[in-house]
Length: 172
Image (cartoon, rainbow, N blue to C red; front, side):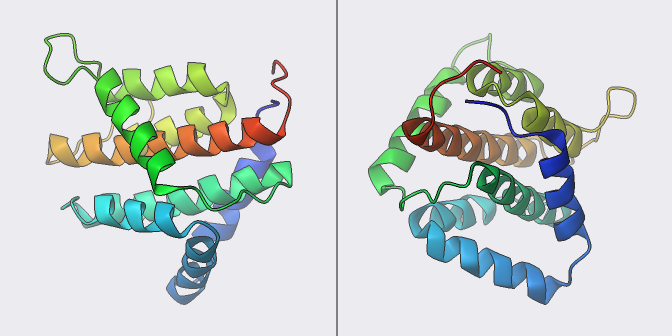
């Protein structure tokens, strides 16, 4: 599967960064109708994040991710709750939260980049969630950024896995 071109991601960002709150809500409703269970899961997870700026950032990233995956021109059937739950459980298990060698937020994003081969999209998400290397974003609550990155990673994994069902697995 070819990766999503940088231009597609940039166009999605441009769209969602320059529309009104009402227009964003319209897109969220459209995407909620397309992926109802995923949307509900995303909203439940977002509700646990206290940092409202991070919540808004995640909403923008969610919209950008969904719009970017439309690049493939494939209408993904509604994801099943079981698929979302299994992906969530596998991802959380991969974090090894009970061990001393738990990967950092950056490491988890980099690991998903390797798994999905979506370098352009993952580099964009890393920049928007963590900031550039020389000006890393500081969050007041570590749990907030851990939660935000987990949900973003899970969404990327879900969409990538669904796309692979319809596309050949070509090398980037």
